[in-house]
Image (tube, rainbow, N blue to C red; front, top):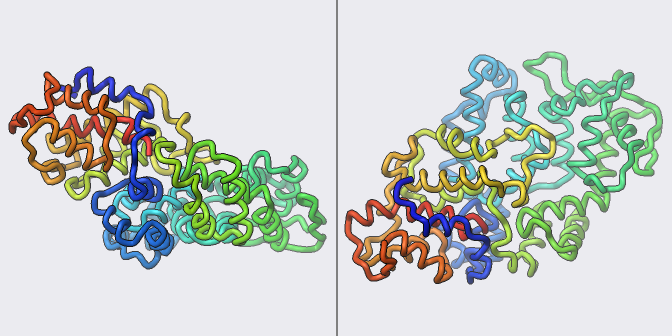
Length: 483
């Protein structure tokens, strides 16, 4: 990008300098429970107060969401019965594929139900199923499993996943029979969905859980295939799971009891609590907050809203500003939300091909069963950082045609000002909503003005040539990368 000088590059290479910056509770809350701060979000939080705004977001079904509603209505694939959807995916794969990927990004950007959408993302990774090989089934899994239970009860979520055609296919439980029990689902159910790898289960428990889920399969016809229980394929002998005896002669009750054993186990409470704390507080949460959140999970019998309500009320949550590094999709969405309403997406394809794909964070494209990682170390590498810096600069220059498929008018976001100092401050205020260190402000001044003079007059030519890259540098800076 022409015009980005050494001062800008030095700013990009800085560390978490903003961790020492004073950030208001309102901005901290919005950075944590939304995909990114829009200027229009600030007043509602200040009007309601933090606690009531959290309750507002938890009661997501009552929040009007007209843009998302229109998006879904205009794309019939989201309401198709499974047989028609599978036929459509076979015949017009790219249509279904683009609808699914674009819906994930669109909802994150434009939904008013921001906390709900963040929880959808968390459970999408928790119960990971890659879309490319299971396209129609993944779309229905997203609708009927993850979205239906994202802010509901954890047991309902796990049961729905266990009976999801996409999960039954992906982890091979659809072909698990009493003659040949398949251990893939049993292992991931304990390691990734409930207890955690150190949750206290043994290889014998894996084998016993696999036996308990034999017969959890699909109806025969591929195009109408849905969950069914086959007693003929089920191992009816006695089993023992985590020390609990499952008597002989039963059918589907074996799997249902295993789910009860697992979701009510202390290791599951701790595993889920740690994941939530990692998502909303810090990559390596302190033991105390994990324990108290696990207790909230247990006492509420796996109520996800109640567990989050506890977490958001803790001192650890409110003291954690600057401790989460935005994952690539989080970063992209946050930029677009920050540019709202001055940015228009006419064609989403470049967002995937020139931003998310190079950064390694395409929706539903993680192929191992453990889901995309949610710690900074997984994303802080040379190529990843270069791609995100390039994306920041390109998107900010969309008004000049540097990013096809987007239109942008920065003049509606950044007021007309007289001096370079005012331009830098107006830009950082618009997208960060807090001050930055004077040393970092000086670097931005030096980029906009060769002399670094905050009193230099902003001419039309200077504004037009420097403002897009200035915005890109603010997005690429640690102040925006970390939240």
